[in-house]
Image (cartoon, rainbow, N blue to C red; front, side, top):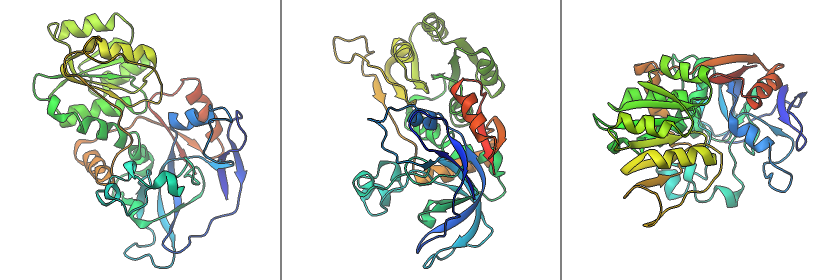
Length: 345
């Protein structure tokens, strides 16, 4: 079968021919219908040899959807031909967090060598995908896999981040989304669907600000130091109740901290890095919280897909064939994508 693999440190991914995998006991094979392209992929491919831990060659793709094609021994209650989305943060299935559906916070995954598809295990950028357990499959039903595959990360991750701050976002509250890319433009829609808050979007790209307006942002501003005064003016000088940062470089961390209100949340979702001063003598607003959530729970993916059905959450997508997948990653690297790229084998 064809697969898109990262094969050498510092080199772009390649489309190659590899053996078609067979499901082992307890596993399910999907014929892939769609796979999402994510900044996390670009991040791990940018790591130097000393920091890269994901194995080579690595078939990319941690956002996956497909139809059940073959079932391993012992698998029950899964029908061939069923359209499924893949829950990506695989855990041990035995610890307290996994029993709660929070496999994204599995306490045993690292020491047991359990990795998500595309982030250590073979991913969905291929004609077929092995899913380690049927519990990691969520029925798509009537949802189009190409339009909705990105919800497995680009929807689930902001949903989980926002859900943790819902009590801060009643009517009259203000939420800021920094970075209106693949995850951020979905976050705007989730905020509009689940809260009565005023939603403000910040980005350095005018096209992405236009997309933010199209998907429901009440206000958009350039992501620059002057945005702090503009956002504070909107709130009568008080600041905002929650900041969702989908970039998390030093500039956006500083922006978020400068505009968050007392008792507000600064939620760090992006894969960038930086530092923030905290404590009584720092510039942090009184009782403001900083959180760094990761992905989301299995039950939350059910909720995200239900939200897509009921509220029409729409992922802005650009599609590519598997042969053209390297071009999708080149556009991602050059910041030329608006929304999310989806590979259709």
